[in-house]
Structures are given as structure tokens and as C-alpha cells.
Image (tube, rainbow, N blue to C red):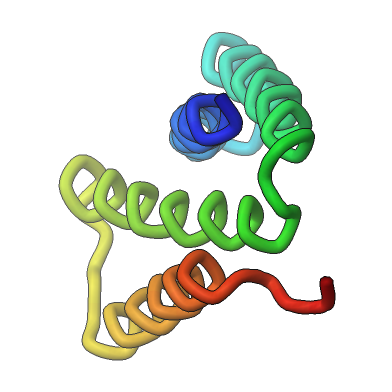
Amino acid sequence: MGYVYLSVSIITELVGTTMLKASNGFTRLGPTMTSLIAYTICFYFLSLTLRTVNMSVAYALWGGIGIVLTTAVAVLFMHAPLNFASVCGIFLILVGSLVLNLYGAGGH
């Protein structure tokens, strides 16, 4: 169940971040409220994830997948520019997440 909770956390973090942009500095009520609610749900499910998934693995996945999805939404729907350095940085984050998942967090 930990990874199901993590998936919900990642998706709601994506919604929260997207609505944060749409809130225009918390000047638009609907996106502001949606963002705050989404972040609340996100962190609740992240806390449930940590019951069964190692914290460093969960956070690496949450951050890595979140960055990729947020970048995809920004590029596809908000026409954000994407350059080679950004792609390389995102790739390195994903490699780090993969290494943590395959070989564990260490320090047993």
C-alpha cells in the first residue's frame, strides 16, 4: 500500500504545484484553495507512505517523479522552455532515485 499512497501523494503534489502557478501569487481564490487542499492531501499521503517505505527512497521517488511530471505539465500546457541543462539535471535526479530504489538507502 505504501507505493499506492506515494502515487496519490505525487499526483496531488502535481495538482498543488500547478494550481500554485495558476493562483498568481495567491491572488485568485479558486486556484489558491485548490493548491492548499492538494498540498494537504499530498503530505497526508506522504506521511502514510513513510509507514512502510524507507524515507530516503520515498522522498527520492516523490521528488524525482514529481519533477518529471511537473516539468512535463509546464512544457506541454504552460509552454515553459526546456533546455539541455534542465534535461540533464532531471536525468541525474531520476538516476539517483533509481539507485536508491535498487540498492536501498544504506545505514541499516
